[in-house]
Amino acid sequence: MKKKEISDLDTQIGSRIKSIRSDNKLSQEKMAAKIGVESLNFYQSVEKGSNRLSIEHCIKICDEFGVSMDFILRGKISDNKEFEIFFDSLAPENKVREFMNIILKLCGDEDENYVDFLFDIYKRMRRNDASGI
Image 1 (cartoon, rainbow, N blue to C red):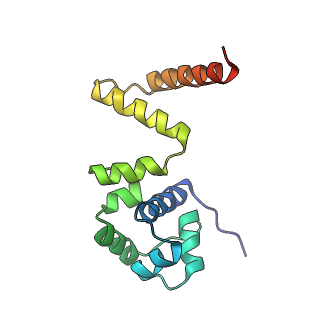
Image 2: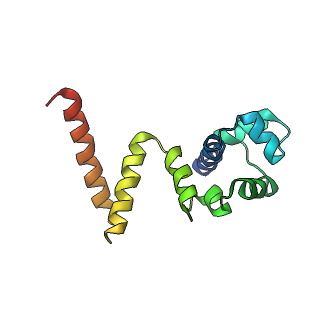
């Protein structure tokens, strides 16, 4: 039997669901019970991106935690609560990049090359700080 490939999308959805759970200070067991998933192993694999929740379970998450389906499935942020959950789910390096994107959007400049340029400068500055230069 062929092993199922984990897509980037499945991993991202799992990460957002995990962030919702963490933001609400729930264990995996309590989150699974709250949304009606009977198997803890299945729920754990959802957070890893190797399984998918049903639409019904996603709707329960939306209703219970006040997030949108757009946020769970596509990462589209519609309010401050979703932004906090999204931002908490990012790796530290990605937080800086996302922050730079936000600043550029607020300034009316969404040039991806400019974000890459700023991020490279930031990484060089961090390396220089770490080396004592």
